[in-house]
Image 1 (cartoon, rainbow, N blue to C red):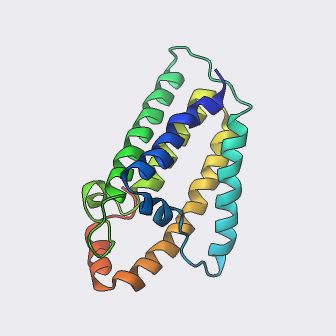
Image 2 (cartoon, rainbow, N blue to C red):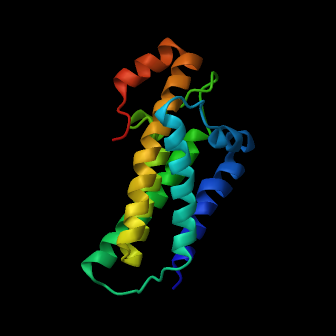
Length: 173
């Protein structure tokens, strides 16, 4: 099976479910906070690695077997998809002021980024590709800098409410 097939459910959840739940949320999800300093380089690494994941998966194969590596890949992949769907549902239902603190956002300030990482690690395990794993590592490290910019923007936009939320909820897990 071609590795690109793994991205079909991901895209359906990431874009289709979000659009179905709330079309305005698609625009919020596509928004990137203003970047400063090293964040600009991280933004480009994020975009390049994101594109590389999609393109490289087109050239990889998933060999269905029941090895430990394959089963770990299935678990990570499915867990990532489920977390992505749960994140999308919560993201599409913000408070009246626009802040997401309910649902899965009670446990992680950035569950969508975490779900992407888990899902993509599942893809790397399923395709048995160390190169894809390396690209995903670059993707996740660069995501951290994107997240820092987002948090700075949220502090500006939501003030004390976001500062309180930051104190109560972890950034990742």
